[in-house]
Length: 252
Image (tube, rainbow, N blue to C red):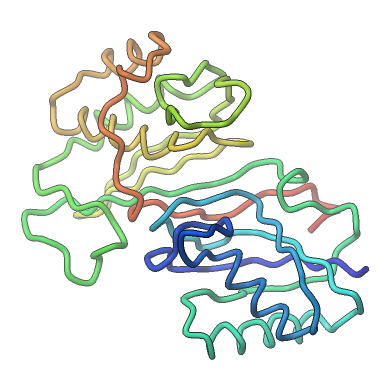
């Protein structure tokens, strides 16, 4: 069966998340419905990572198998046509045929995420459901200094959801940078894999530092405690974006 790699952009606002669920529409389910209309048989779309309700994507990656080969552009265009007709807020940016050994999840080397904060006095109009609004002035330099204490290989128990199903809380965080451009503050995170709610937990904790409620050392102490109760408030999902996934060169 030919396998296709999909790069997907979506507005997560109307969905219960990436994963197909019984309690509402999902991104995975919408793409599978579109694929069924294209090929006439049930398909299973496997993503590089799950995103929660309200989380967006610039470059989610998935793979799908069809019973017969299609030109890659046809796969992209037909899926987009069916998604558009259904009123979905999902677009297939690229489709390419890949080797059957490619797995969107298990072949991934690194995943990149972005958390966006709009830091201004006035509420959001165009950015509503696209970013976290923080009216109190934030010190982005202090946030970045605190973020660097989290980079590296650590037990991230403090910064994962109590419902996280990962077998181990130990992860290697390759990058966690905080950058300001005018009223926009961006938190960039890179790792091979993340724990459930890990980035949103980082964002909420770093906000406390930016507001002056926490010092840089408080973040390091919270990490060392390996205690979920030491985490700052978990930031809302609407500011989080799945940016891209890195794969070995031979898989791309």
